[in-house]
Length: 416
Image (cartoon, rainbow, N blue to C red; front, side, top):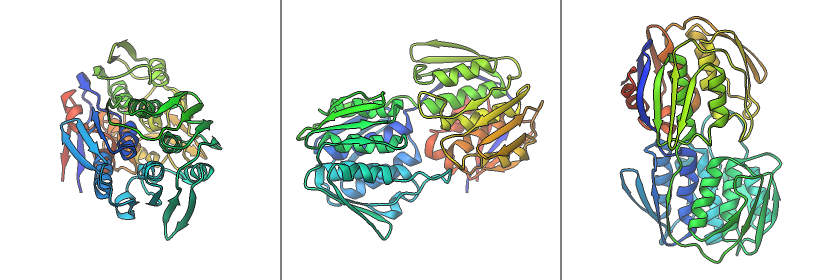
């Protein structure tokens, strides 16, 4: 099993290119199932989750050609309408094949998904939405079985804001008969990116990015070319790393407009930030000031940045409170941060962090994707050597993170 060895204490300086967004790429890869034409995607990140999704689609019969960050997908010859457990157990996003398969082929058999153990993320919102559109669904032996001659437009209200639920039903509605209205829909930029790709394929969608999305179903979709948006969580992670360890970095290929809440918190912590077209620069020449964080659905502070800010707060001046409202089990990194000397108390969904002057390197273990990034940040800012174990989580969502950090001057390397 691979690990990361980090010699802490080095400032981060220089430029780093931001990759395409994992959470935009995965649903857009699934959108290829909606047409027999070729879908061309630019800026596809080289990640384990993307490779897993690519393998799943190929097992169904999608032909895929990859050249660097360009991917061409053609679902003209689908021979299998199933996503087996073996293919989806490591990645919850595999549920996103359900809507497209039922919409285009009238049938799907999809394993109940796995993924990070950060809390309950039920698929009942996906199922209820498809049932409202006329699909017959039953769950048997750990699989969702869905059938429909043709889905019908419907008005669907989400009891809870669900990003993948919104994406799945938006794709399904694109080929449904009639008008579908999604209410209390997710507003995340990745939902908008999927909508933009579907529109380029001939879908009729209005309101993506708001809490009400209207979709007029069409008979068929066609091929298109689409560029995956930059990863806002990767952007935020590098900015927080420089704020915690100190430094002067510039992100290229980044978007500030989808990161406003994070940038405001970093400025509150004492970072100087400059924004230009496709670039974000951060300079930090002092110990950060503690900042309070409360996660909530977009456009509020993202749950996927909570752990990274906790790492920064461990080294900050003052005390900070972090409240996690999205996932009930997303403080698993706290125990590992304590091994580095962090002072954190947890009660329910609230963590109180008392900033300390320095952290000490130690051997620590990653528990999920964003916790991995949090521990890398802490290791960069700690004194001495930090070994981060179980970094396969990192490879699911960060493209060549150690190479990018090395390019910024970090002393970091992968070891067996």
